[in-house]
Length: 376
Image 1: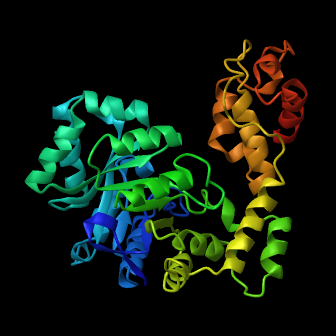
Image 2 (image 1 turned 180 degrees about the vertical axis):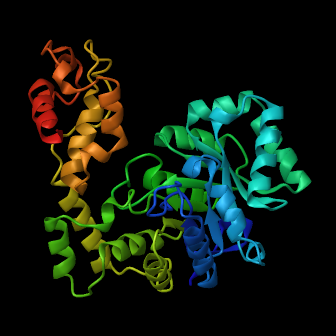
Image 3 (image 1 turned 90 degrees about the vertical axis):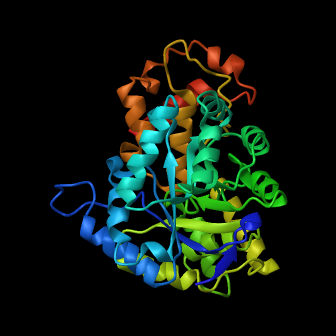
């Protein structure tokens, strides 16, 4: 296992961090998580050298922390650092923050949390956390030793990321990043900004929710033609670990074989590991994925709200992802929400308000119908 110094914190962490959000349930379907299997996987990772474990209050219907706490008994707690999170929706004042932290410490069976994150924030959520005194609470808990580092995980625009990162003295940040997200959310600019301030960066969605683990034909052809043979998963992790600003890459695993494969991959990667030919390959891979884009919708939402309630950017996002990554629309949360909210393209009456507002001048009315046909 390769280890990296976490920026200004100066502590060492395994390059592979185990994510505890995607454990599956038993075959019987009685529970959302197969507890004994999950405990075995966590301990397998730690025995293989993993020192960074990530969970959150809300994961797996609030059971993830409980199972992790059980897995870290018998001396395992002393071998790792734990990251968990405070969700905005669960707290409204100091008393509720204190109660939530106490609950999490109890579930994890520990007297302190190493990395405590404000969960999934953007500028708006950060302002909310400030309004209820979360920064002061985090500072107090750090002084009391109940948390070691004050952190946040992020989902939002680069502009929001820059604002939040510069607005407080953060110890660590967790961002979504992969070779397809270089200009999305915090992106490469955000990664480099955090690095310039010495703030360690933990990566989530390195495989884009598993979408980058199985390459479409035109992408696989590029991998196959390269002299060195690696799986799409290894290429994606190798690309991430090539960046010196990356401290930890999170990966969720459901099988012992996945843990073993990740341990092998992360025993071979370090900053600067890729040569120019490999970097050029990944640029070509990105271009090959993007060539499969159905419509150039940027998600700017100038077309919204639709007078008839159609989720225009949501439908186009699903359409693109089906073509790029082979997702199953019926299983995707976005499609489920669109259906539940009766926001499908079948509600479109062709009024043209969206096309008049679109800065890309896209043929929205025609393409909505094409998208809806392919998604259903």
